[in-house]
Length: 437
Ligand code: COA
Ligand code: AMP
Ligand code: ZN
Image (cartoon, rainbow, N blue to C red):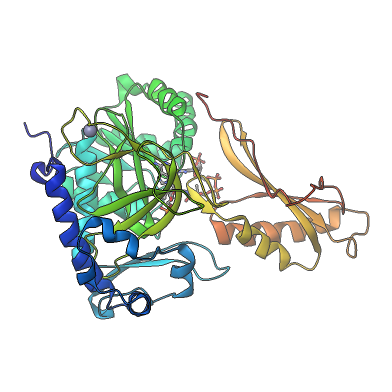
């Protein structure tokens, strides 16, 4: 029985891997130079792909940020003719430009293969029944896992997010063996198992959970494993680097193998942008090595992690990163949706009835993560009564939901009711309690 999806690539000795990466990096640079953005950046710095003689020359190349992607929206980083591009994914939101990523046929093929490889490393096999409990549409976890699991040879159920009863029905009808879901949702889903009196070990064939798309602790993982009675494997990815299939835990569950034939990973000090010593936490910076339509060079992910020192007993030579411990910006993730406080602020400031102060409170209500937004009414508008403002409250709620894809609870409060902080205003209070902590 094979234990690797692509043995040669996954177990390649590190010296061979470095040579392989260098070749792919140069090819990537040649392609990137064809995009308006990188063409100009490389010309300004007087760098040509031939100047990159070893991987240590990587630091001659500038880093790329989300702002670069936004500023050069939509086609500035496109390196291939538009008529060869067959899919795009982009971030939600209408305040400011979204970030958009384009893929050609090769890119989608390579991505599906990386997801298949990842699922295989976690123990999934052709013949498994894979249920993808994740938003489809523009979210990369939907189609990303769909095509990856199909490539693996699993019967793949595109269940989508929500409707917990239906999820369980699908599991029992079709004998689901592997689930991909967001860790915070699995607690909610487990409640429904209890309500329906469906016993996971007796009534289902579940054997593997794949969890990702939001930060979670080792304690939370253990709690989920205890609830479901099966192992849960951490899956890391981000849209700018395709989506899922960037780094994944193998059956050893001791860090996430980052697929180094497809990406170069650096971990840097977020202030100095210099590499940190191995094992020290810093910001993950990534370069695509197998993307043609839209290569991205030295992308600042804003995610904090570290390389796990030492080799993995599974025999894969690709380095492992630790679970993500935080971010270097103010983005937070709720119900699997990414939110920048500025998106909420821009919407609030579009309402003349609203004052300057607001507070986003993230909390766990009856086991479910919720977003509560407390908003101060403008003193010029406030008449002393809240009731006539119900219509305003609803409009705010709808606009924020359309922007961030999560329905917030909006609570209007009197002018001056929110606590004032000295110095920089505190806009987000995260009170979510993580089960297992
Ligand atoms: N994944 C799957 N289902 C979820 C979920 C999540 N992260 N968070 C909530 N849900 C479920 C709820 O339990 C509810 O179903 P139920 O009534 O059977 O329990 C249903 O979705 C609606 O949730 P609710 O909290 O009322 O709605 P909302 O408007 O605040 O959020 C979602 C809507 C859940 C559809 C939206 O947040 C979403 O699409 N989340 C998934 C994002 C995702 O897949 N990200 C991965 C990116 S790779
Ligand atoms: P998106 O581009 O919408 O797919 O969001 C990507 C972001 O989700 C990453 O940059 C991380 O902040 C977060 N994320 C994805 N997977 C994980 C994971 N396994 N653990 C923690 N955070 C994650
Ligand atoms: Zn391993």
